[in-house]
Every structure is written in C-alpha cells, then in structure tokens.
View 1: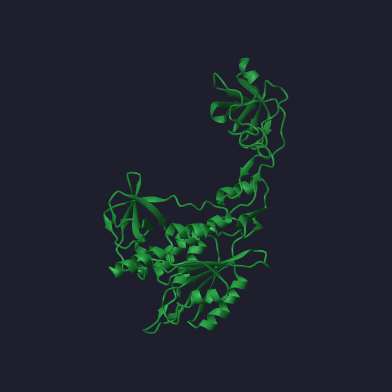
View 2: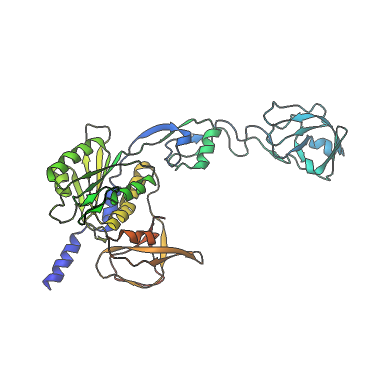
Length: 416
C-alpha cells in the first residue's frame, strides 16, 4: 500500500505534458528582424507585408497569339481585317489607326489602343496581308487579361508571418523586392555530455559509444533553417560550469542531451542552478523523456531578454520526441508561425500501456479511405535509436487511460 502511495505521489509531482507545453510556449522569445537577399529567404518567416507596386497585370495583356481587333468592327459584319502591324511582347503599345483593321498581337504583349478583342491564330486564315476570321461571335475583352484583374496597386500580396517558399520568391521578384525582412534566427548550440561518448569518426572502446543525439538534433533544427553549433563536455562539474557559462553569454538557446536524470554524474540541473538559470520545470509526466528540464536566464543588460535552455534526457528516443514536442512549437511561436499541432491519426489496433504517463508511441503511417492510420512499432525502449528508422511518427496517448482501442484518434508528431 505504501509503495502505491509513493508511486502516486511521485506521479503527482511531475509536470504534465499539457503544463510543460504551456510553460514553454509562454516563454517564447522574439529574436528580432533582419534583411536578407530575397533569393536566400526560402524557409524563413516573412516579417513585412509585401504589397503590389503597380496593378497586376500592369496593362491589358494579350493572352493568346493572334490578332487584336475592335469588337465594334466585328459586330458591323467585318470578317476580313487588314493587318497594320505586329504588337510584340516587351514592345511599346501600338495604336490601331483604322478600327476596321487589325494588329497581330503576341502573348504577353500590351493590347493595342483602339482594340478590345483578340482572336487566336487557330481561328484565322492569313493571306496577302489580311486576316480572315472564322467566327460568328466574339466577346468584349476576349483573350485579354485585363489590367488590375489579379491585384491592384498597394494590395497586400503576401502578409507578414508567412513561411517563405518558391511561390513567394516569384512574387518578391515581380514587385522588385531584392531584399526582404525576415525573422532573425536564434543562435543555438547543442551540447552533449558524458565520458562514454566519442566522435563519429572514432572507434569506441568496449565501454563507449559514438555521439549520435547531437547530430539528430542538428538535423531536426536544420528542418527549421537553424544552423546550430555543437559541443561536447566531459562529466566534470567545474568544466561544465565554465563552458556552460560561456555558452550562455554567446548563444540564445542551449539544447542539452543527457545528464538531467538521477545519476551520480548528471550534473546539468545543479550547474544550471549555480549559473542562475531559472528552472521552470524538471521531470514531465511522459514516456519517453520523463527527466526533461526546461528553464531560462534573464539577461537585462542585453538586447535580448532571455537565454532559453532545453535539457533533454540522454536516451536517443527521448531526445528525439522531446525536440519535436517542445522545441518545434516554441520556435514556431517565437518567430510568428502557427505553433498548434493539428495532426491526428487513427490507431490501427488495440494497445495497452499501464503507467499513468503520457506515452509517445512510435508508429508507421499509411492512408486508408482518406484516413491516416497509425500502426504501433515494437521497440526496446528509449535507448533503441534504430527503431526510429522503422517509424514515421509518434502517436500521443493521454495519461488518463491504459487501454487504447482500435479506431481511436490521437494527436500525431510526424518526422517524415
């Protein structure tokens, strides 16, 4: 009975996933704005409205190769039109001098003055300088893209806080925005700790493993266009304190992987406390990733008000899912993007998980009848890094149940 009471008390002292998410989002940071060359802005977040510098199209634009005529002449019964000249794309606007005549007009060209209909070549017979029309009726402004039809001058073409893609690049070029204002990226360092870790290029001893979590996080941040630095620190309290103090001065965000649990050499929480980093929570009611630590250090004398610290557990799957669940939405809110996860999937089979914890279940995804189906992938715990290769996402199972039945819908964290 006392064991059960201890377990329940421990569970109650943990921060829930919902509480942790709220605390993290409430501590988002505005990193400011910078100007970049428009061609290098893909994947960044726009921080200004892009407006039309003129009407679009800026003139009555010919949309088919053919002849430009006056509708009035056609309605008078004229079907054979003398050709006065050729209106080419990129050339000054011509004038139809005799409205009973026509001007050949190319796609993209300005519509000649005194004309209001374009008839494509496929419906014409051209001979001896005359174009004969094989039509019974025409419509006013037929095959003409009217001036200002798409957008008017000073219309907002792209609102700020838009994630820039190739589509936006074309608009920047069209309106002459050679430089655009975007959200400044945070300066981030990813830190691993532990005497058991060696570099990727090294051959580990029997008691060692290669650094992998750092590079997983590097790749996850590259998806957000963040180029993070990396560092490794051995399990020495004094060294940790010296180096982390330096990192807090230089970087906006510190991401740790490891040394936040209850081990004899898990010094990160103590070191952060010594460096006046405020703990906002430590240990979350979830699996994997329960030892997760989050905090901030306020820096009043600097232009940026806080340094943010995410200290993830060292097990690979814990680090991976915690970054997706917590760092991604924090970053998105910080730079002005939507940060709410609306993705969901249907559980493909019954699943049982006993502990009173939110469980991030690794799943394989497939589409069936327009629904996203999530099939559990068996793993060997949060240290089973290779199991991620077989998965597409994490299904977030709530902490208020143990039996999850086929057909239930749950939130989804995708990474493919």
